[in-house]
Length: 274
Ligand code: NAP
Image (cartoon, rainbow, N blue to C red; front, top):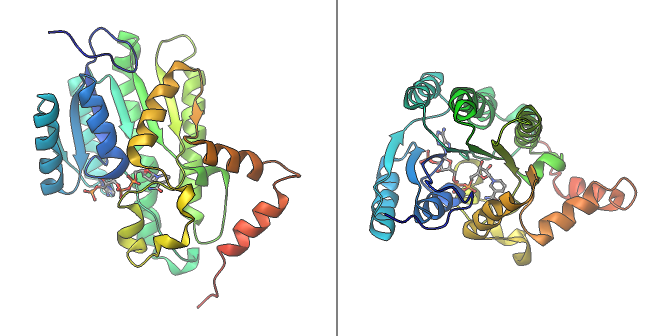
């Protein structure tokens, strides 16, 4: 059977494991990769949502995704998934996408939430990359996308752990990229800005008013995914999707020009302590 063109131009697309595939950016990656001929493994906690997405993918692409239920705040689940990756020994694309946000001052958020974020955003990607890379290196073929955020460039109050864990993913991905210098394995730290997903309506963001964010700053998860996969045509490792986000971070990180923007951004995120 002829395979549709895929973002790596591989003759045989292979297998993609996507964490956080039950909604938003992860579901959009699953849709795009499946349409490109990849067999997908969809990981998340919500079985019913995954089943629904798997059914849609199967209808659209005639490929039956595998569903993997795991809670990445739990070390046992992280280890179970790592062992599966090692046993399979043939994953071609790993997308570490699962994530969530917290809101509030560091000292007011329960330590268990801080620990959960470290597990989901950092420990799980480290385990999964460690599990997948030996087989990728042996076959000299593979792609890893770690979903960071523009928050990795813009430390601010009320987002202490989020920005820090996303910064880890950025440096982790860049460092891994440098280690892969003598292989064809490609690593990307994808750093989206505001994206219309469930992110801003679940957990700590349940009562968040999304209208506070200017309309023009939002992107759709499909746009983010298309731009991320297209970016593999360049050598970029840290990739910010969308001109608005790119310009914002360019200005924000400019030592002189960004001073006012940084001050405003930080001030806006301050609310009275309670
Ligand atoms: P989303 O729609 O809320 O999706 C988050 C995904 O992560 C869901 O599939 C969720 O599945 C999964 N997940 C959360 N906690 C998990 C856990 N403990 N174990 C396993 N899976 C878990 O949000 P999204 O915007 O697509 O987020 C995807 C990634 O993009 C995140 O890493 C986020 O930080 C990043 N990002 C988002 C934005 C934005 O504005 N939306 C901006 C920059 C970066 P279950 O609930 O079913 O487990």
